[in-house]
Amino acid sequence: MIFDMRTYVCRPGTIAAHLKVYEQYGWGPQTKHLGQPVFYAVTETGVVNSYVHIWCYEDVADRAKRRAAMQADPGWQEFMKKSAELGALVSQTNAIMNEVPFFKPKR
Image (cartoon, rainbow, N blue to C red):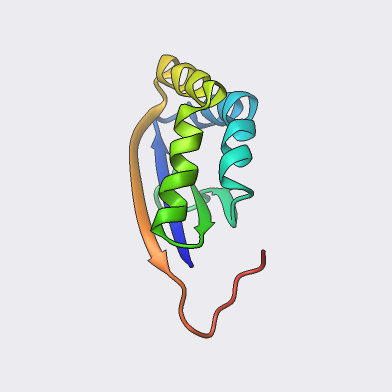
């Protein structure tokens, strides 16, 4: 099992608007293809104006298959267009992580 941790940083004062666009246009198509995230939260301290979400996949092939289906979804493409129009995102960081042997995530 692998985990895809994604961290996004928004311009100051835009994170609420960005998350609203995501909730309205992105959440449905993303969870349709990726399932429910393991974790989704805004940052309280540290790198402010950022949020993190973590997705779980069986392996890299499962991740590639699901993400390709999401990218092809017209609903996801609409979200990407709306997000680009808003222009809130400054940066994105992704990390693919492996679980340790003694940890078994809830599904």
